[in-house]
Length: 263
Image (cartoon, rainbow, N blue to C red; front, side, top):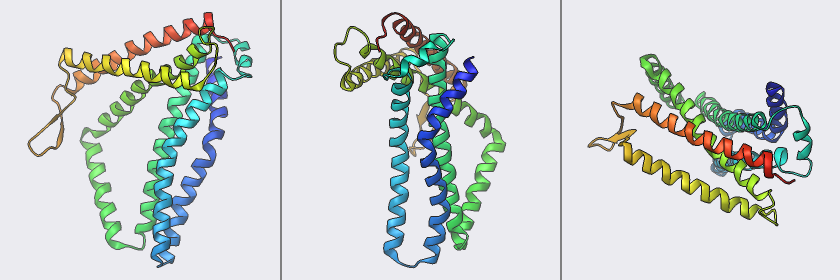
């Protein structure tokens, strides 16, 4: 039943992103063609400005859609229907967390793909740009062949794990406001609680790293970031710490949802 719930949540949230994805892909293909066709500097400026707005707008839309999805599916007037499904509260939380983070990653991936398409289409009529892109592609392939693939995979896993406490903090903030402890269900309270919990988690993480002496990145004399020799150990330790924090937030949120939620 959990997989059906995840599938249903994906269908529900995807409609919020569909228009953004279509605009990103269409613009990345059409804009370079129009730029190559037009020599008007004003048109070029407008096109680049639109590209900038798309990049910034996609980040804002991810935030808005994530908050909207969680509120709509768990804390809106019609959300009680979701709690009549034959699934546990834990499964409901897992579905919302997995779907939210997956859509964030997918949006980031499509943004990169759209930017690559935009640059590639533009380079088709510019030999110097095409040669530059070709050189970058060779360096990326060399990096992946020399063990970079594992580093990229670890980076994605680490990012996914780090996002879990953030999503759980958001859900916990909504949950607390939707209890009898708060007479007024205001989004301002949600924001304040979210910021407070985030500050506590950030402070705890900083103290934890300081106590155990973790240094994920060191800086050399040329101010170039180089991976610490203990990267693998640090990767494991930090992810375990994030999972412990996620576990505490998860069980706390589940308990409050089961016993104190009021919609």
